[in-house]
Length: 213
Image (cartoon, rainbow, N blue to C red; front, side, top):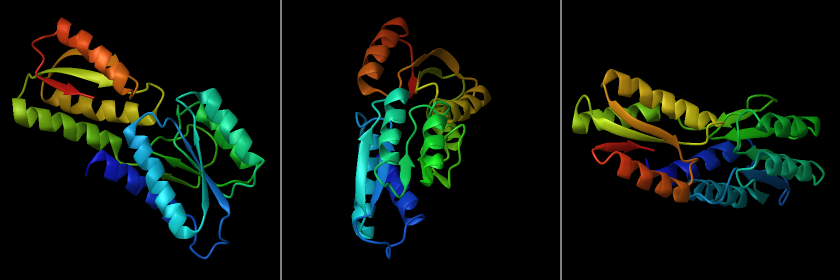
């Protein structure tokens, strides 16, 4: 399953599992997304919008721009506007706890998407198995290149559960398959930053055979 389909599925499952098609039309639900400067999360938004339209809800979408302070401000705004449900894709698994608690205090149910919240109460969490995904990626490299492959890792945002879990799954495979880890540097799930980091790493490690990102 490609990442666009996965993002759409995550959104659809989150909405379908929580709201009823018999609910009052045009009540508002909210999606607070970590960033819309990333195709995966744009697909997440599109999937949520499609499902909200089908169920008769007005979907309010707010972009946190990968900034926990902006994320908190977004949720603060939502708590005074009669939002019936909060779908949130955290910028940081620990920092998002304050936003979740604000929603809890306002009696707004919270569903986390793709990344967990370290504190606060959520009614559901919808995500892929990131640890397994990381392991599968490592096993694929081993299948193609064999043991001892020279690999570079581009890390995601350090404070997110997705980055930690995916990286941990990959490293299990890397250790099992005796990969030579030439470098591991953060690129924060940002394509522009990834390009710059990768250009520098290719100059330093021209013998690299695979990249996990």
